[in-house]
Structure formats: C-alpha cells, structure tokens
Length: 288
Ligand code: GUN
Image (cartoon, rainbow, N blue to C red; front, side, top):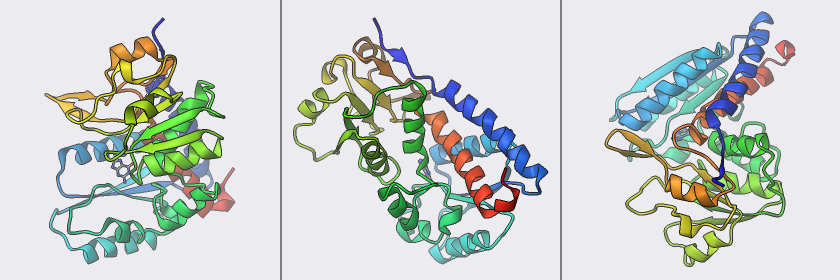
C-alpha cells in the first residue's frame, strides 16, 4: 500500500482559519496585528515567497507592510529600516527574506530585529530560547513540520530522525524541536560520510537540499515504512519539485509530504501564527 499523504494545504487551511478568528478578536480589542516584510533585490524565488506571504497574511486579516529594496543598498540603510520598524508600535512582526545579497551580513541584520517582533525566530535571543525549549517565536519551516507530524499523530518519541540540511532556517532549529520530543536526531550535509547507511537506519527522513542535480531521495535510500518530509524546492522548466522521487518513495513510506502542497504552506501558516502571537504578546491587554 502506498504511503499516506501529509496534506500541508489542508492542515495550513485549518490553522489559517483559526488565526483569522484570533486576528478578528484582537482587532475588536483595538489591536490590528501587522506583519512587515523586507525583500532586498529581485530574486524571482524570493519575490514569489514574499508575494505568497503577503497574500496569505491579508487573507487572515493581518495588516501588511511590503518593503522592496534595491539589490545594491547598503547594510546600514537596511539596518535603519529595521530600526524604524522596531520602533513602530503598529508593527508586530518583521521578516527579512533570506538570502540577502552577499555584501550584507545576514547575522548582523537578523540581530537588528527586536526579538519580540522576530516572527522568523532567527535572532540570537530566539535561537537561544529554542535551545532551552523556551521559545515562543520558532522558525517557521521547522515548526510547520512539527505541526504536520502532530496533526497526523505520527510518533516522534524514540524515533531515529535524520535531517539532510544544516541551515539556520531548517536543519539546526528542527533538530532541537525533534530532540525536545525525544527523537534521536542526526543532521547530515554535503560532507557527511555514510549518508546512505544513516538514511536507511532512519524512521523519519527530512530532506531540504533543493538541488536535484546533487541529491534526489530515491526509494532504495529509505527504510520500509519511513516517514518522509520533503522540504526541497527545485524549479525545473517552470515546475516545482521537491528532493524526493515522490512516486517510488511513496510506495515504501508510511507517510509522505508532496511538493507542492506539503511543507511550503505550513511555513507560511507558521509565519502568520508567529505574527499573531507577537501581536498578542506586545498588546497583552488586548489578548483574549
Ligand atoms: N528564505 C527561505 N525560507 C525563508 C524563511 O522561512 N524565512 C526567511 N526570512 N527567509 C527565507
């Protein structure tokens, strides 16, 4: 029997409909939750992500600010914009779309965002809280994956989970979230030895490589009944593909996410959720 489908569109629609209610409750009490996004440059993939985030934010009733900046802007100009958003009481969440152009230091820029408006959960403060299991604003893709696993009651405790990605956006924070839930976690990357045997020993496989010339997860690489979460985004002749050879891996997996319609919509839903959480925390009197 083929693996069951983890439907990120359906789960995220459910989350977004609950968020719409929370947003309207906040508005009734005088707070209009607002998400400010910043995009530097014209990278088509990043532009599309921002467009989708803006659209989804408006759909749940959030106020949005959409800052588009020139590729060649100076780091201090970007820092000034972030400062002004930090100090604007009408703004509750700030997202700087990554990657930034090479001449801008991502670490420094992310850390310009005040932690209470850091709806990406990437500042040093929020990363530190995550490490302690105390974060309320968690990185969106990892928390979206945890939501999917929980929605379908997929066992995490004592499972061997492998993450093929070591980024600050996905692999590292996800490792902590899975560890907190008593999984045994392995993080792999391009220099890992024995990737094949590590994959075959894993009950939960999360892959976020995004380069099908270098890595495709094939059926023979996964254990029977593995849970397969595909975070990869590869654009091939206008078509969006994940890292996974979906049809063949599905035959072996117990659960599997499609691309599109798996993790992607969850990343957006968790961004909206973080924004509502940030607005509630910044205006505690208005919180229901
Ligand atoms: N680029 C790709 N994914 C993300 C994300 O979740 N947040 C930000 N800020 N940039 C991204």
